[in-house]
Amino acid sequence: MKKYFFIAALLLCTVFPGKVNAEEEELLKPQFGIYPAMFEVEIGSDSVEKSLIITNLKKKPVSMRVELYSWTYNEHFQIKLVPSSPKTLDQWMVVNPVRFTIEPGGIQTIRFSITPRVKPEPGEYRAMLYVIEEPDPVNAGNGVLITAKLGVGIYGYVQPVVHSPKIIDLSFHRASTTLSVHLLNEGNVHARFRGRYIIWKKSLFSGSGSMKKLPEMIEQGHEPSGFLAQGFFPGDPVLPKTARSYNLKLAIPKNSGPYVVAVIGELDGKPVEKLFQ
Image 1 (tube, rainbow, N blue to C red):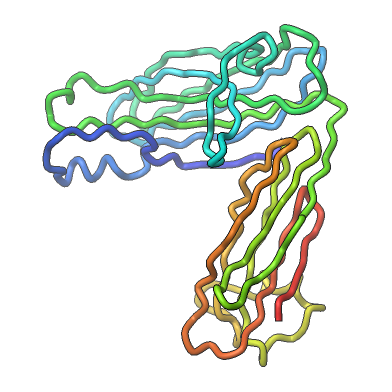
Image 2: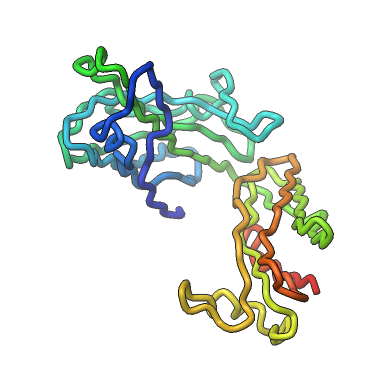
């Protein structure tokens, strides 16, 4: 299982008329820590048990509740909740507790178990565990009501899983300075394309043989001669039996002269390298 740490910002804000003061601006800072922020688990005949930790970074107690949904993406690649059924992951999960209060600086452990209600087909099952801050009734009439909604993605895999992502197109359109990636996932579990692009002065680029070492050479504030800019691919999941495209507009520094664009990344753990000269 991959481990992540996420300091949650305020993801869901309801603002009523009123002027935001310094105290309210303080509320816009990160208020919660959540660990881990994502789970990948194998689902078999035995129950799976996991836990996550919520940290209250506020200076006052916070009451929260837990909601659980299965999900997919809509046509705009935004999370779309799907109806529960005996075949959805949320119906196989038991969460405890579902309501709680965390003292300032305190933590709360949330435990969940997964036990399929029916024999599942091979592949991927997804749920989103939302931890939602309850509104503070004391502040209800103060003009500004801000609550947090933290989402933890849960991916469950039933063997045999099939990893079959591929890059259909990876190209750089120099006239529009746009880097395009088109991915197709023919497997039964999601895939991710992670990596970065690096823009380098062509006259000072040492060659494609050193592309793997480029990220190690770039230290913020101490960039080597020839380095112009870099950026990162979103790394969002490409769900099973779907395609996804990214078109990244590169910020080429003015008066940079001739340049090359190096793409260094991985698709489901397999290296991806390409140089555009």
